[in-house]
Length: 426
Ligand SMILES: Nc1ncnc2c1ncn2[C@@H]1O[C@H](COP(=O)(O)OP(=O)(O)O)[C@@H](O)[C@H]1O
Ligand SMILES: [Mg+2]
Image (cartoon, rainbow, N blue to C red; front, side):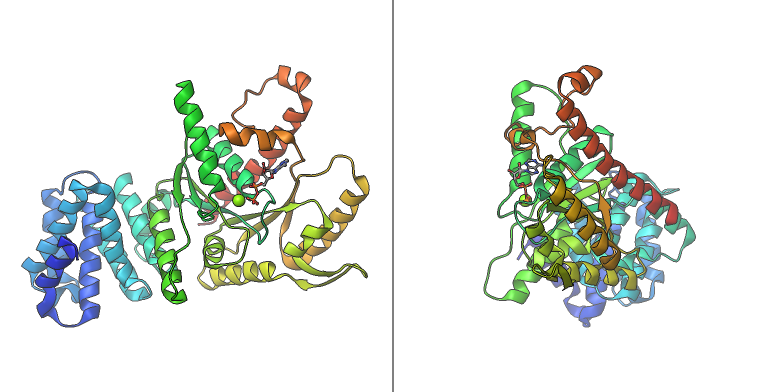
């Protein structure tokens, strides 16, 4: 047991009810996260803490000094070891997860703390956003107008998930190109490799780091979080562990503009979690009839659509869940990948079928990426087409590369536009 847990146990053992205790723990952790966001805890923040402890109903039942000690321990921990300290504080915050009244109150406490020193600061709001993200959907409804405004201004990352239930369709390649493309547009980008066991995206980025280091150049690098599947016989415990791992990873990327989630090519809990987060979902599909079954069950002989695939059902389930929580549905894009340049008949048949499915299943068709050897070659240097210099000479000397870049730009534009529209809507 860590020192912090021991201390909080001994401080609070007298206070009885676990729910009250969990709330106090979470409230002190959240206050410490916000109070330390700009550096040291100020005098105004300390006296705001006293006000909160003597005025907020569920906090009043505790001894003020014990509670203030708990706050101090969280704050000192964060100041001494920011990453670990924050992770520990967020873990305490997560104990309120599932209690939406508690979550809302906790956010109001965090906002009160953030305003102790005057108007909201960006680092303070980033911490509030982390707390809100840790609390899940319920945390996002803020009834205080100022807080809601500052919260919206703190730019929640836009989540782009790349997924389907099939390996080798270009998910990791697409994720990497999106990440680099967005960075070249000066967005802050985080990546989550949910296919951590295979780790293609992680390897791609490791290759990029090597290229950067050996060339002494300044290749932009996204923040990467690699998530390995949890092991253990107890499935429920393993899934809870995976949920925790992802939440921690995402909370650490709270100040990114975009978070790209690359998912495994199979069904499973990590795949579901990645899709549950998606503001935009991009499903790359190999350009062959064999790959349509990622989206729908097909009677090949009679060329009939029998119904959605298990993957499409999962996507619509996750999307409905978002809507039930007052969010926009998943913006689902299906993108054909490795388009064969020569097979016009196949291309036409695929287009027809995909258009039919698009209306039925609620995805939008995105112009695809052509089959090009360069995608495979670039992996080893960790570079993408969007790192290579683009100029008129290239258009003349290497039209294929020029066109490939154009295809990628189209994809990037969609992602960026969707994020801007979301800001507009909220
Ligand atoms: N448009 C493309 N043209 C040529 N090769 C591609 C293209 N897209 C992906 N690939 C290659 O296909 C292989 C599988 O791609 P990957 O992105 O790892 O798929 P997934 O993540 O879906 O398993 C890789 O070798 C990759 O370089
Ligand atoms: Mg992959």
